[in-house]
Length: 124
Image (tube, rainbow, N blue to C red; front, top):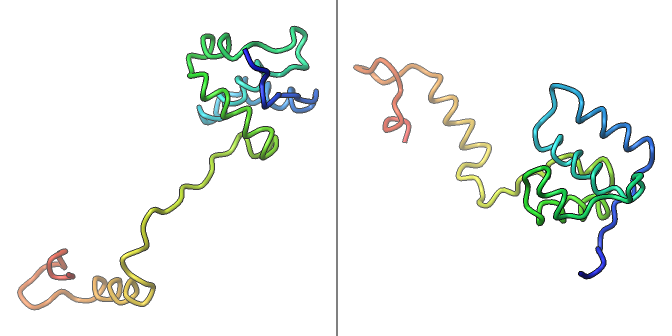
């Protein structure tokens, strides 16, 4: 088995922070999972850290997930590994700011005669 490219080495303070995160009740599931992965993969543990296969089995996650968490820690740092990356917008917005403002103003105005409210067809 080749040597790991991304080694998890956590300080005592980082371990305490992750342990608190895992033990607190109200935390996002992805954060708790990443914290558990990092705690189990830490080479500064008393047992030198678990292998990815053991971590995957104990946490019921894929080995690739563990590799990605390790990589994020090494490349982006401790505080970034626990946060999600913002989604990239795949397409440009259909309306610019001026068009959107016009549409909002129109929808807030009185509907045409004979109508109770604006419909999507009327606004289009």
